[in-house]
Amino acid sequence: MIDSIIFDLDGTLIDSLPDVLASLNLLLAEEKRRPLSQEELRSLIGRGVNPMIEGAYGMTGKAIASLAELEHVVNRYLEHYKANPVGHTVVFPNVIDTLGKLKEDGFRMGVCTNKPYEITLLVLEGLGMNVFFNGVTGGDSLTFNKPDPRHILVTLDLIKSDPSRAVMVGDSRIDAEAGRNAGLSVIAVAYGYRSEPVESLGADVVIDDFGQLPQAITQLCPVQEG
Image (tube, rainbow, N blue to C red):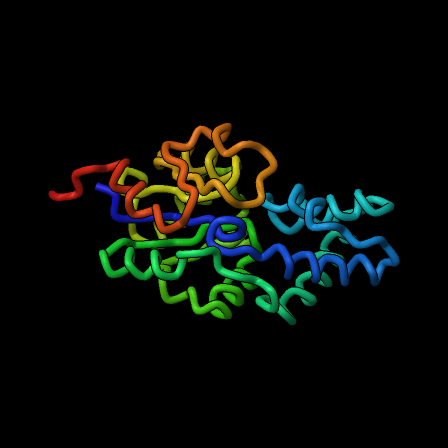
């Protein structure tokens, strides 16, 4: 019986690319560096803020030379992002209605994202989505994050569930690997930020529209009665 769902955030539930890009380009402008395009940013999203910032600096000039420098510029980026976390961020079609239906049906739901925890909470609250989730973990909540499966397992603990009762929903190879290695079935959304074909992720089910999620869960576990 599947009664729990772990969601990725960026590229799965929301399109946050415009706000991430705006905050990152403010930081780059302060450093007299050129701005990144959306396509360049897409290639950097998914593994967390530190790799994203390192990648952005590598693309636009001199690479970051030390952990101290990285910490400094990441903090500056986060200050820009916290000042306007949902200015241009949108929820993907049918997400709100579907999450509401799943909650009404008794599903326990959590968010497992490599986005920084504080920013994640600000975004969820700003979009009115925090009411759907029983637990949230971010990229800096723990000493490990996706694709490490322990990130998924800790999130499951927060929502009082376990891998045998849960499914992972995401848009990237990072999500698929983390979910699979944690022992969860994986549902991939066909949209999102990845650069590779969704079929290459090896998900159990692929959905084109978030509204197809309840049917996909039924497909994985046709009989949910005790």
